[in-house]
Each structure stands twice: as C-alpha cells, then as structure tokens.
Length: 510
Image (tube, rainbow, N blue to C red; front, side, top):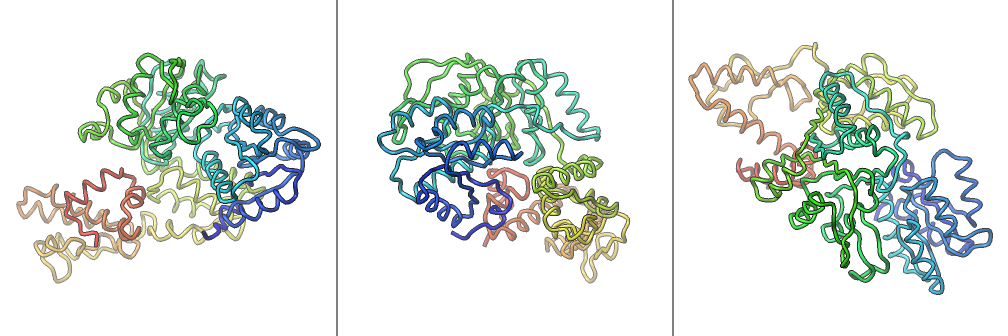
C-alpha cells in the first residue's frame, strides 16, 4: 500500500508507550509504512509531561500495561480524564489479560495481546484511527467547539430554530447536503440545552459496516459473537443523560431501523447477546442528506421511524445559498489551520475572496475548510491572491462581471445548427463555454429555453431537465471513471438517486 504523505504530514501521530525498545521499533516501522506518523515513549510519566507541554495530543494511544515508572491502566484513566474521545489500545502479555479486559470498564478502545501478529496490530490501530477521525464518539467538552458562523438570512433562520429548540428535549431531524455543517447544528442544540453538561455522542451510521453497527449502537455482551472478549457499552449507553447524534440516518440498514424505533418509543433496548433490558435517557438528533420521503416511497426506510424522527425539522442551507458568509468562514478556517500547523495565519486579498465567494462549493463548508487548509500549506506568501487558489476554484471560471463567452449565436441557434438539431445532440450547445471553464452557461440555457418556447414546444421543462441531469451525471462518472458512489458524492446526491437516474435517463456508462 503506498504511503499517503499528506496524512503523514497533517494527521496527529499515534503515540506508542512501551519500555521494550524492540516493540516500539517494530510498531513504528510498520505504521510508517502505512502512512501513519508515530511518536514513542518509554513510560507513562513521559506521556503526561508531553500532554502538559503541548496543546494537541495523539490521534491514538497504544500503551503497554506493565512498565517501570507507571501502569498503563493508570495512564488510561488519566488520559480519559483529559481526552475522553481518544481511542486507547492496551498492549498486554497473556498473564495480564484479566487486567486488560478490566480496562474496558475504564474506556479502552481494544486490547492487543503479546506476542501480536503485526498486520493484525496495524489493522487494529487503523480502526482506532478511523474511529478518531470519523467522529468524536465519547463525552466532549462542548465549550471547546467553535460557534457557528453565518450572517446570511438562511443561517439566521437556522440560529433562530436552534434557539427555540435548545431548551426542549424533542427529537430533531437536520437535513442538508453533505458538508453543510449538520453536526455543528447538533452540537449547538446540545450545548445550549439542559443536557449540556452530559455526554454528546456522535455516530455516522453510513460509515460503519452493517454487521458492526448494531453492536456500536446498543453494545454487546461478552461472547455475543466472535471477537467479543468483553462486554462493551454502545452509543446509547455512552450518551445516557445527554444527546445522541445519528448522522446519515437515511443510510441505516432496514432491520436496524426497527430496533431504533423501539428505543425511541420507550427508551429500552438490549445489548447484542444480552437478556436484560437497558434503559437510556437520551435525546436523539438525526441528520441526513437523503430525501427521506423518497426513501420511504422506495421501501428502504420505515415510514413509522420517519415520522418518529421528523418531529421538528431544521434545514441547513448549502454554502452556495449563503455566499455572503464565505469571507468570514474563510478567515476563520485560515486562522484555525494556521493554529493546527503552528504557523502564522495567511489572509486573502479582496480579489481572491471575491473569486472564492462565487465558487459553487459542491462540498459545501467542508470543502471550504479543506481549501483553506490547502492554502495554508501551499500558498507561497502570507497574502493569498487569485493565482494561489486551488485548481478546482480557478477552473470554475471568472466571477460575474466578466464578458460571457457564449457559443450560442442567436435565440436557440448554435453556429451552423438549428434548434431542432441541437436537441438531437445533447451537449452540442456550449452554455457559457462550460467545457472551457466558463461560469455563464445559464445565459445559453435561457436562450435555448426561449427558442423552444417560441417554437411552441410544451415539454420544455422535461427536455432541458433531462439534458441537464444527463450532462451532470455523465461528467461526474467521467471524473470518477465510472464509480457511481464516488460520482454521487461529488454531485451531492445519494447512491440510490444516481442509480435511479442512470436507469431513467438511459445513460451509457461504458
């Protein structure tokens, strides 16, 4: 597997704590080959000193149990006080297995028996890294979370909704495109609620394999399945008294939806392999980019669960609907990236901010954050100019105000082509020079619509919508070499939606 040099540079390291130099050496080399940065310590005292001296801790902690200068279990307890969401893997000899198993009650992610199989050890650490990056799944101090930013009217509506709902215990459904900040809304609802001092637990139901999701949500008893060497609390138990955020709820497997419905109905559930009911006092906030009404019609989402979740709905606008917020968000992300990387914050000149503000942002706020991180690393000077912006922004074309380069010669006419011929050749009309990176295809689209309307056509909506959707999907499939799921993500639509559209439009993926 090739090393991802970007992740080595930007990802926080895995901290390895063991007095045995050979163990440290073997793990360091194996993890670096996988593109995972490391940092080693010989005892718990060194770890605690490093945490005292530095603002940022590890991505994952891997610690031995028995070491001169401290116990790995004592280190686990101290770490969990400081960083409750940090995955900790305990390494232990077979004679220490009982104490390692007891570590689960203190919040250990997993234990690694010695002598260990190196590939399995690396895979376990990779799972812990994924857990750490995917979501903060244990108790968090909400005071550390940044406030949401937004002056646009659409965001002010969201803020008003948060204000009205914060003191309530009612279930909330947050909808919006991927990357628009749905989890920030969930954080805000929790932070300003009576449950603010209790746990906030998040889980992305689409990111966890189906066969593991039930155990992640509800926990499991020892021996419930192969590999279940100890009982483990699920997310509902972790969130007891607080808030559980179920992200991408539209992708939850159908059979698990039934179990979730029962928990929402009476607050009781059973661990996997368990026989005693567990009760959790949890406020559920769900989020999705999917059209749940359509998912219900397709028979892949339970209608009764939809109505149970859809008590109050908050719609989060896409970033292109709140362009006036882009400058403030960009400044905030540039400052945060600089702080993370330990460098001076960069700033954008007015022209660069203007160009960025007119970018479509298919990845929404998350894409803007990534762009700012890229600029912090890649821009050659402290002042970011238009020429320094990343390729995806520059290739999108100039901002409005520049002359539009239209290939349309007259109402509905392309040079040498009648309107009827153009309809027979989807993509023949170059709306605003889109193939050359122009941003003004809408003017060409308007002229084509006028030509069809003046010709007396009564199916203009269907004709142009079909061509529009076909062109979008074909372009996305071309950029992903036919990979549907990746194409759907780039377009900001669901996997089922792109599959249905491909069939309806008769798109040839070859």
